[in-house]
Length: 117
Length: 111
Image (tube, rainbow over all chains, first blue to last red; front, top):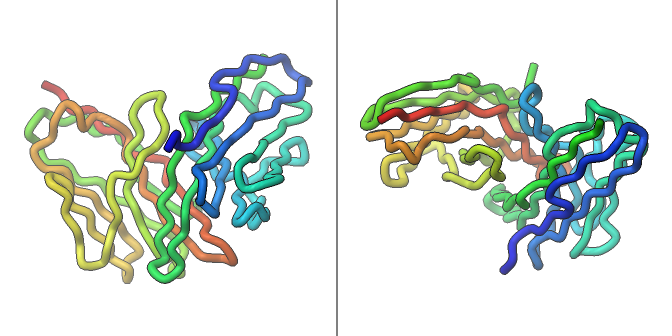
């Protein structure tokens, strides 16, 4: 298994530009999570999906951020327009939840490091 | 108040030392608990699950106290390779499994 695959690994863009981050979860996983990590705020949950349906997007900072999961093997996180304060590492993670035990172990992608100038 | 709180450290310890990390969570309905490890400029990876009865994995011991909403991780006989950030993680079911990470505790093990 190739694990969770994210692209691009690094992106440098200018303020105002649109940024699209991509994620391919592990096959068979039913949950997909988008997190943002900065030194100041740590790892913040932005949104998560269950069976391709968004369950909780309360962590999305503002309307400039949007996420989609059109099918079980692909998700995008879009920032439009981007701002310097969006600079962070964006992680995608997927999991297969075990409802009876309440366990939900995440496997992370390598992350997308975004710099907005 | 943050949903999951940890002492950010850093903890600087010599090789062979025993070090303990603590974590508290705010939602009493939280269902499952984990410790993850994150190396510098890498993604977080699962270290171990945490159970009320306590559990060990080699030099690592994790403990959960549901009454106090408190989670701990003990590392014995620290190795240089243990240097990393340790993240406390809580799962909460609210129509779906919401997985919340603490900000992490940094550990530096010195020779």
